[in-house]
Length: 223
Image (tube, rainbow, N blue to C red):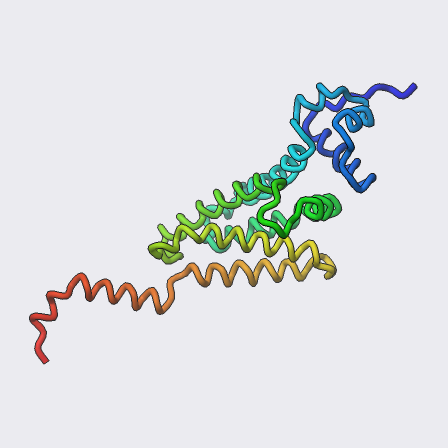
């Protein structure tokens, strides 16, 4: 008789779930079936997760948080510009995804990736948007980024869109070492931050505001 095994951590339960869906190509029919396959009781399963969707969400959020924590703990992090922080995070996240590529492809395929934000990555969206808000505020305070009325609040949305584009690109990337994805990250983040930074139009707008605010000076000007 096989020795009874008990999974004692959320991580072990995550790994068991990943192994199941990749081996069978589908989710377990029920928590009972999954628990029995892993010598667990349903109660032990529910001690950690309320559903299979909850497991998938936790896998995604754990990967995202691990990538973010990793780059934030680098000694040079505090010296990075907002652009450099975005690049570092995106590179780190994609690097972590490589270790779970088969599961990522499975998860996105079964979550309706192209229809809004899949429920399985809503936690990731929250992390990315909070991260984006932080580095954008840093960039505005330092003068790296332009503070545009009506548009600044949308910067984080632009970074989330870029995140989704890069994730989708990576799932289709067949280049060795996923080098094309690295290039997509570099190009995508750089063009996004180019749009965030001050431009000639911003300078012209600032000049216009200055002239409007100092309109009285025209009364003393003679040509």
